Image (cartoon, rainbow, N blue to C red; front, side):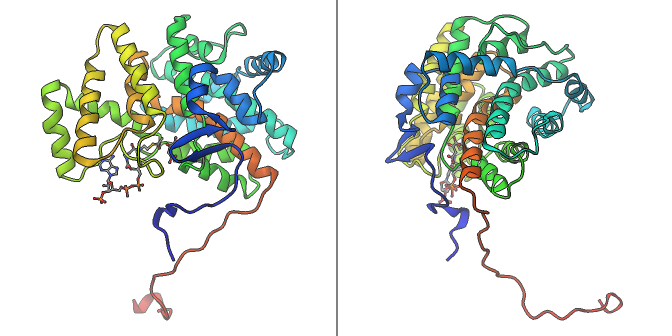
Length: 369
Ligand SMILES: CC(=O)SCCNC(=O)CCNC(=O)[C@H](O)C(C)(C)COP(=O)(O)OP(=O)(O)OC[C@H]1O[C@@H](n2cnc3c(N)ncnc32)[C@H](O)[C@@H]1OP(=O)(O)O
Ligand SMILES: O=C([O-])CC(=O)C(=O)O
C-alpha cells in the first residue's frame, strides 16, 4: 500500500524529540518549560548531549560556539561573488556546502569529529547569514565578537550595533521554539543523506534545501508577504475568504502532525503582540489575529510555528527574506543532533516505490520513431 506523503508512517526510532498527543518535548523536556526557562545555546547542548548542562559545561559549550563563529576570508569572498538578488536561502545553502571545503575534518566520520562539526556549523551559520545580508545590502561583513552570546552576536554582526536585551531574548526564544521537530521534511532529508554515510555538510545542505520550500520553513516569509498583500484591517476578511473559496492555501496554517494546534504558536502569538506594542504599531499583529479567527472558523485550521514567527521577526526589524535563514540558524541544532543519532546507529534509508508506469515496451530504433 502506498501512503502518499508518508503520512503517519513511522520511519525510524529517535531519542531526541517527541510529539505525543499534541505535546512537544526535546529530550523529554516540554517545549513550554524550555521556552520559559532555557536559552537557545542551552537547548543546543540538550539536543546534542541528552542532558541539561551544569554551569561548567554550559560555560565551555558557549566558549566553543564563540571560538568557532569566525568564517574564512575565502568564504566571504565567494559570497561576494554570488548575485546580490539571489535569495538568502539559496546563498546560505551554497555557502554551507562550500564550508565543507574549509573543514579539515570534513571527511572524518568519527563521533568526536562529527560533534565538532555540529558545533562549527551552529557557530558559523549566524556569521554566514549576517555576511550574506550585509553583502547583499552593499555593506562590509562584520566579524563575530568573542564577548557576545550566539544570538546577541548575530544581531550585532547583522546591524553593526549591540541590540537591546529585549530583542536578544525575543530572538533567543523563537530559536528555542524552532530548534527541533521530530521527523519534519528537512530533518528527514538530513537523515536520508547521513544514512548513505555522506559527510555532515552534505546532510545539512540537503536539509537547508528542504527547509526552503513554502510548505515547510519557507512559509514564514510567505506569511509576511500575505500580510502585506492584505494591507488593511478591512481587506482581511474578503482576502482570506477569497483564498479559501478558491482552495488557495493560507501560509502558516495547518500541519501534518498537529490537528488541534501547534504548541509553539501560542508562545509566538504572545510575543508578537508584546513586540508590536513595544514597537508602537500592532497593525500586523491585529491583522494576523483576524486571519487566525477567519481560518479557524471557516476551515478549522490552526496556526503553525511559521504564522506568528513572521510578525515576531518583522517587529525585530529582520527583513522578510531572512526569516527562513533564521529558521535554519535554529534548526541546525536539531538537524545535527539527528545526523549524529543517524550515524550512531545507521542503516541506509531506502524505501520502495509502487511502479505504475508503462510495461512491456519494446525498444524502437531512433529512425523509426
Ligand atoms: C515549519 C513547518 O513546516 S510548519 C508548516 C508550514 N507550511 C505552511 O504553513 C504551508 C500551509 N500549510 C500546508 O500547506 C499544509 O497544511 C501542510 C503542508 C503544512 C500539511 O499538509 P498535509 O498534511 O499534506 O495536508 P494537505 O495539504 O493534504 O491538506 C489537507 C486539507 O486541508 C487543506 N489545507 C491544509 N493546509 C491548508 C492551508 N494552510 N490553507 C488552506 N487549506 C489548507 C488542504 O487544501 C486539504 O483540503 P482538501 O481536503 O479540501 O483538499
Ligand atoms: O514537523 C513538521 O512537519 C514541520 C514543522 O512544524 C517543523 O519542522 O517545525
